[in-house]
Length: 498
Image (cartoon, rainbow, N blue to C red):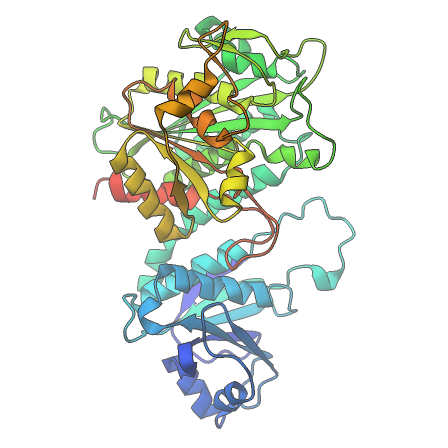
């Protein structure tokens, strides 16, 4: 789908989308159209329950006085609340309504809104961003889809006076959307397509964008001493991998980077502690953390971020076989600490243990954030609305919370306290990999904390937000790529040279 920006001109085909503020207050574009059509919008509002609240919509077919086939009214909410997220929802809601409408062209009218902190150019760029995010579909395996179910929109034009400024602002947002789409694609792919070697190859392809990529195989990891990570993958025929991605965009390449570490279990059967059959197909997306890190690195490269960033993903497949890790086994991690494996289905923390230690030892980052679909317990705690945030540094936690709020990917900070640490004490090793049912997401984070030295560190448990069960303004049902926009914002606001 192509996105363009043009000077405000009345379209002669397709669908036209205009914003309406709360309490049925018309924007400039809406007033102009209402006058041109002899009060069409006013009459439509009077005959409906549409109030202009955020995410409301009202579709008018073949509107009299206009050459377009559809006029779509989208609620913007209160004028003072029209921020970047509201503008993105404007574009996203338009795509949700019109993507498969039969129209090939959609025109979004952008306006200066009195009381809003956004300029028309900022509103336009964010509306286009929202439209693109919502246009995502993963349909490569659909061979018999009906024509009327397929997307029809080929082009979205955003019309406004200062279209050149909007186009400039959209350029970096478009790079972020490409990173989001990559992460969604990787999470959506089945496990017979995405496995450790093929996912490593996807990451390696990003070298074309200027990223420096290294891939460590099992021999290299064994030589280093990554017994925790390798233990998880030893039951699979697929070779485990560790991928290192570097973007050195700061003026001083010697400046300590910020690092992001992703859990990449490309399929999680649970191993010998095998999962129930119902819903096991969802475990193709247990590599969601790795997908986010890979998507983030693409976004940073495309928008040429002025920061030094390292992305590391540990890639394994957790399968039951004659060579699989057993409950009760003891493994020695890269750190030298030993772990008694009580449950082979608590495998992600073993992968991250070695990946985190490797990252801080090699790159000495100024801060380190890991992402993982780590625990079902975080879903019980927070549902599918928030990701869990655990951190050993208050400033880093605050920056992550702020970034999440800004982009609409909210986090909720959880405790990291000593009483929980006692739950993972082992009788025969330095620790065990589970601490019982109570506080399961917290004890998992406490386990990871043992593999972080003095580095400022945060852990994001994204198990509840990686896959959406229903449509949202910016995300169709399926893979969300939750974390790409959040971490891009974190880098832009806190680690990028201004």
